[in-house]
Length: 404
Image 1 (cartoon, rainbow, N blue to C red):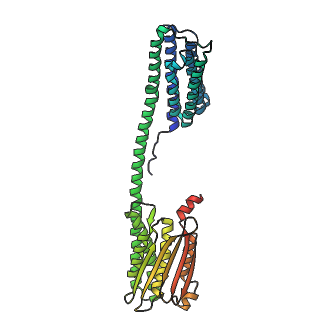
Image 2 (image 1 turned 135 degrees about the horizontal axis):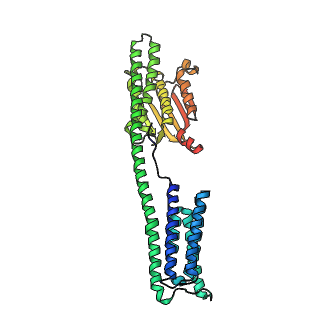
Image 3 (image 1 turned 180 degrees about the vertical axis):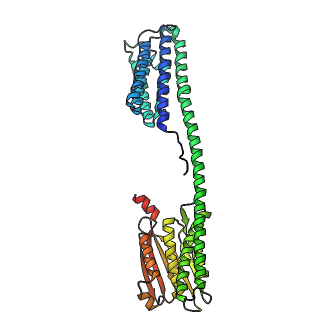
């Protein structure tokens, strides 16, 4: 049994990122608040918001360990971060505050967690910038710049260092780690897929070889049989086995392992039937007029068997000794969705009256059963001017996919 492929689970990455963001941002915000209090002499709202952010964020991550709802924790953390950043910006210079870059960090954190969070935070951050600008223009009395003029360069420095570290030290490392994990998992998947393609080709090759072995055994049995009728039946079975073997051979040698290029297959099949049937005194030509179509194996096999039966019947019963004739095979797209119309017509003498009345002949029963297997229908017209089969069918694989 093949080993399962271990792919990094996205939620685990998000959980690690959430813990790292909360712990690092809380620690940095606490340090930022202390810097504001003592070296910079910033008193009031800014340091109070920093310390409150630490307590709320750590409480939020503690609740995550209890309820385990990562999305709720991420959303609440984003809201806390957004409100705290807006408060610090308003009381540290408004639209001119260097702390405004933290809004961009929050948006990046949202996208790192989930696309919907990033979109929400992006719109919220843009709205916040507009509101901060409007508040600054309105000059509301109780909103003042708490940063002393002599401390503003230092405040700008630590605000930018704070933003840069969060971007590079938290989100940057997480994104690089996730990218590396995706590259490794992609390479592993490609390697496994290549292995499976090789194995699948080998399966088709072995099936083709086994079918050819069965065909050879049938050929030996036909040669050893003194009963002409039994020999004909064995030869018919041999042709049916050969028509299936050709499909597996084409799947083995071609790039696409799921679809058959149908026209070359029909060309190869009819050439085989012409050479394998006893037509030494006949000159029968095959004319193909088919659209370029790739059919799945579930469609190609029954359709190939149907063509095998129809062409074999024409070669056996449609032409007299020393006769010249032609079998026309056409395939076109039908009117209904995913439908095709297959026409097989010869210019021979048609079925004999006895064969035409014998509705229980194996060949005709097979043709009708195969048409039903293709979710289609077949019309048979025979006269002294030849025999005409018209089959309307569906590509089974496409129909099943759309139906499901």
